[in-house]
Length: 116
Image (tube, rainbow, N blue to C red; front, side):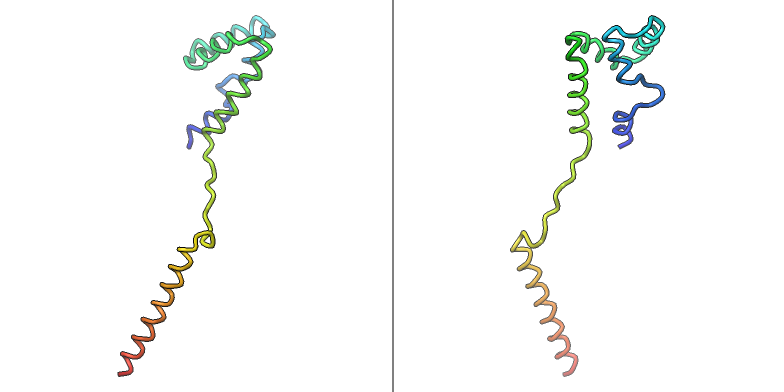
């Protein structure tokens, strides 16, 4: 679960998404571009992802990143399971009633056996 938290949050050692997008669109100063390139040189997977994003037209980059993030969150965040109610299962209700009747019957038989 800790890995999931690392993926979904931005840490101090990671570049923010808007800075990466600005790098792709060429809106960064030369110093900032150099900083991003140095960071990408240290990170293997992020550099590969950025190379893939460069192949997408600039106008579609933000939409593509948003879609990818949405799909990742949908796959990584555990889904809540719907709990089945006992009233939805008639066999379970019948089993509970039968067990209660058997318990009552056993209690009566034991009480009668003790009196004799």
